[in-house]
Image 1 (cartoon, protein in one colour):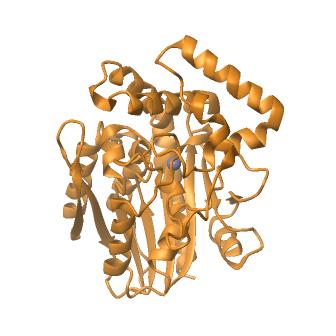
Image 2 (image 1 turned 90 degrees about the vertical axis):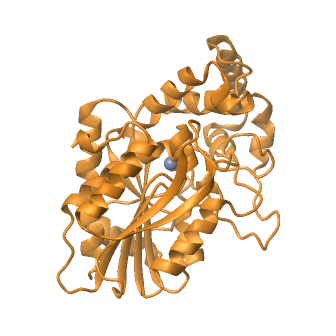
Length: 357
Ligand SMILES: [Zn+2]
């Protein structure tokens, strides 16, 4: 199963194109005007298994958080090889590969504009409708001053002091809820629609027009127990959508619950697809695979934030920071990779069964 994992974005893309050709199915390509760190071209690619007329479409998406795309891409490659659709001709599986190709190629969570796309799908017509005052409190010390254990310890001490004053949940929210005030900071939600958001809009219009019922499985890594893949819903468990998520997938964690470890952003891609294609009935979930400890993952993100402020890929420490990011979001262990693909295919199967009614 680990053979589905690629060494970098460009290899993942080539394998995705080859997998579509082998099936064979057509590819729709959306080119990002930015280039990757090695000058490589960047694309979101869309492949559809099943008829264009299908009224029931399950979307399987990878790479919203760039570096987390290795897992989603691996599941998509495996799905291209093995997924069989219900025979009634009314169900399709739409594979959206690398929706944040710059982040994937750069081994970053954020995109070419330093935007965290899972904090980004807000209503742009309502200015300032999201704010995160907690981020303002910690912005000056969340990112370490340099790439060293000493700088990390200084930052940690200040975060710990904030946690003692305000509580664990307040610290979590301050860091991860998303912020709209510091464009060079972490978990920045953006100020206008990004290339990826415009691409999601085009994908909705070009591939979901005939759909009446849609599911979304948006694959992520970096939170939860090692190799464990948890389904997440952005809706309350007793809402109609929340009930459908549970009926399709079994146990589902609800990110807006106050007790959750998950960020519970109000502007995730789960809302993004609904906004881009409001006509079908949606049953969207995130599928989150645990990797390392929360602290290790958080430290990798903080040093990656430092790298962003200090020259990015051209900084001499870039290789060391990126090694931390890869370990935090795409562990090397064969058992982790096998667990991701096995569970990913299982969840795709549940989604296809669910959407078939
Ligand atoms: Zn993610």
